[in-house]
Length: 344
Image (tube, rainbow, N blue to C red; front, side, top):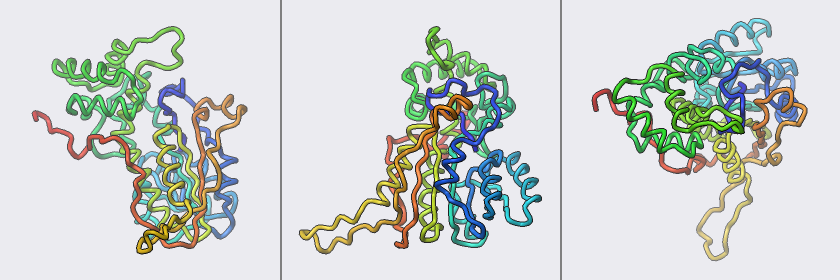
């Protein structure tokens, strides 16, 4: 699934674009799918990675929460003689999904973020350049972006826009949203984008729309994207076979930080101490395969959405999984579960 966000790094966020799988050659090199192996594509999207993996002879369990992507995947699966299984679900639930489809796997690939197809569909509410309902949900259930901007408390809204969206004027934007929603609730994307634009402003030198960062923060929050990623990494540790590979492509510094922190923690050598003999040193459950890889200049020129992409990968050792990780040890954020009800 190709993403179009990037915390201001991608000037075409929200604009039309043809789906192109990012860093495909690098993904395949790190994943190294072989005939007879089973690979999980946790973010199926338009199926670019899945097709390439299937063409290498491996089987694929593909996951996506978007019903339209699932429909695409089921049509694709018909042409591969039973080697592809399409699952409607969240990649954060990867462990349960894998257990229901054969157990341990040889590889996992994750491409984090929103797909170009979702951005280009105005009715999905991701784009600030096309009018549509203020939705932003990758799936078909749960609170929408309209629920968040109309009901989240001022301080919480400012943290979402500032921390998840990198919006430097998050406080001012949140106050403007609060003042406007008191008069009339937000229901449409362009209405919200206009309010944000009046606050943030835009100079001729700006490469991105003033609403880019705020829309990004809302989308990440509505879909719990960072939580999904952290849960998927912990699940990968549990379901990968010894020698199994994980490959993650991110487009935002927060996502990359989670992956980097997880792989660094899991691949760090044991650090026991002769002064603390009763403490059992942590085991190495992964070998970090490489430093972050970026798109080549040629790929970035062909596909502007690849400019902020980073790839990190790891190889599973034979050590027992450690369990939970502190991959989400960031600033405290509000929860969708705590979203005030209408009238609160």
